[in-house]
Amino acid sequence: MAQAILNFPRGFLWGTATASHQVEGNNLNNNWYAWEKSGHIINRNACGMACDWWGGRWKEDFDRAAESGQNAHRLSVEWSRIQPDLNRWDEEALDYYREMLRGLLERGLTPMVTLHHFSEPLWISELGGWQNEAIVEHFAAFVRRTVEALQEYVHWWCTINEPNVYAVQAYLTAEFPPGKKSLAAVYKAINTLIKGHVAAYQIIHEIQPEAKVGLAHQYRGFAPAKPISPLDRWAAKTTSNAFNDAIPRALVDGKLRFLGIRKRISEAKGTQDFLGLNYYTRENVAFSLLAPGELFSKRFFSPEADLSPSGFIANEPEGFFQALKWAKGFKLPIMVTENGTEDAEDHFRPRYLAEHIHQLWHAVNFNWKIQGYFHWSLTDNFEWERGWAQRFGLWELNPATQERLKRPSADFFAAICQQNALSSEMVSEYAPEVFARLFPD
Ligand code: GAL
Image (cartoon, rainbow, N blue to C red; front, side):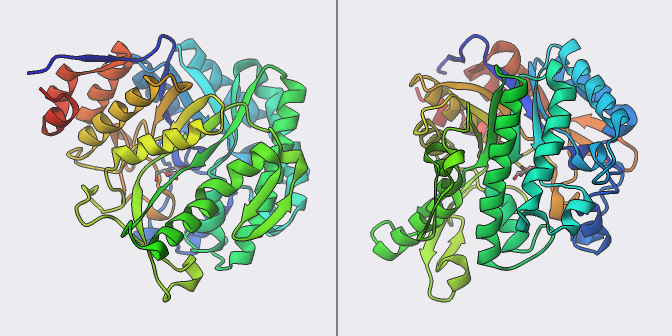
């Protein structure tokens, strides 16, 4: 049997990622709570206490992360807690975040903080959210106050999580609040989100010139269903340009190109210090006249795909390599800000993890400037419109009792973090079904 140790560079960051609304619990003053109350979550699930971090269980979860060799953690702060109303700031909430961040540092975990991860205060939604340019100024004020309070503990900032996913799911597919279905609204949201990012980027650097500021882009692989078909190739490219490229390219050269529209947003030029990459999966795209609202594209997983239990994610590790290659094109240091899968039984996750870390190692070995990897997620948490129906945690969580149970993948990921490597021994122990593929004789 082949024996090998695939090492990562010294100082590589290994951690997990979380988001305030998904883990804190009882965020009763944001758009997601209102969305939940109006019956939009699968099985009418409630976020409830989530992982009870606001009740203090972050301590035991940070212990879990540190004990399993992680040296970093990405979390987000909840705008609706820090600024519950236009003219009200909650200093206690900021103090509590300071305590959490100290908790990370005391355990040897480098924090990365996201300032907007899908949730925003109700008063912002009532003003029209990202359809109203006034949000840019409000977001800027929130960022200033928050960064001033937390700067002492934070070097890595993520302004906005997945603006592409947010714009599409809130304003086109209606899976996120406010549940609109309009391509014009998507375009408007993208414009405003870019301006919000730019304002945040400038403010953070004004307060903390040495900070590293970026955002978490979701890159989804789109492959033409039939590579020889020019129409399928056109559909895949159009989808990819709009979803994957439009926002990050605008942050490079200050030009937004979205479905044939070109707009100059000059102030956006050069507003990333690193490229944050969230990658989950890749799918096929076929041209379809029946789907004008979806850019004439029908999207589906390849019939041979290895699917997660609910069919939400296809295990496409080469897609991860392509995503990293795409990220490299921006000529910035790369941080993998999310990668992971749902899998309550943990039958699928170990091979997903093995194969994705293997591709990450490949990319690192081309000397691409990849600085770290955050797995989604530490424990199961509230998965947005999918509620508790999908379980992404290395630890299983019972939201009713708050009991945590370690899944085998937690030990597997711990071995990777502790050894700063993926070894053949680990793969033969945790994901033997892919051993021959990863370590051919
Ligand atoms: C991402 C999102 C995370 C998490 C993950 C898994 O798009 O940023 O908050 O929900 O998907 O569904």
